[in-house]
Image (tube, rainbow, N blue to C red; front, side):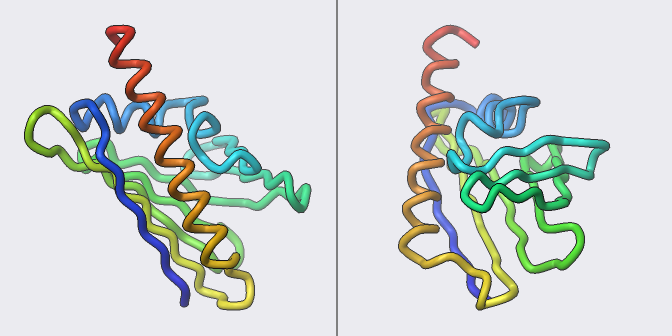
Amino acid sequence: MTEYERSRTMPALPEPVFDEATGPGRLDTWMPRDLHVRVDDPPAATVHEDRGDTNERALLRTRREQLRMEWGTRDDGRYAGWLQVAGLDGGTSQVTVHLSFFDEDSAPPRETVEQELDESLARLEEQVRLRADSGG
């Protein structure tokens, strides 16, 4: 099993950060650019990957009371992940994203995953900042 985890501080309280990360139609604004999530009949979802022009049946569960979102492949169980938002002092939050690849052969290169995680969290932070600046 190969695992990756990244965290980033966000300039807002946990609930608005969680809403920005998990809101309908918002996943594509911060996730890796070549991944597109369509929620079908929750928890069922479909993930389209541009690189391979493939669709993957997935599960996506949001637990607002825990400020947690979990996902994974539906058919083969080779991949899973979660996002957790936690409040920090001073009205800020920490977002942690964790990815697990259960099939070592299908895990992307470490450098690629770490770069995509960092870029995704930076896009999410920018979305949170824009929303906070606009009073939303």
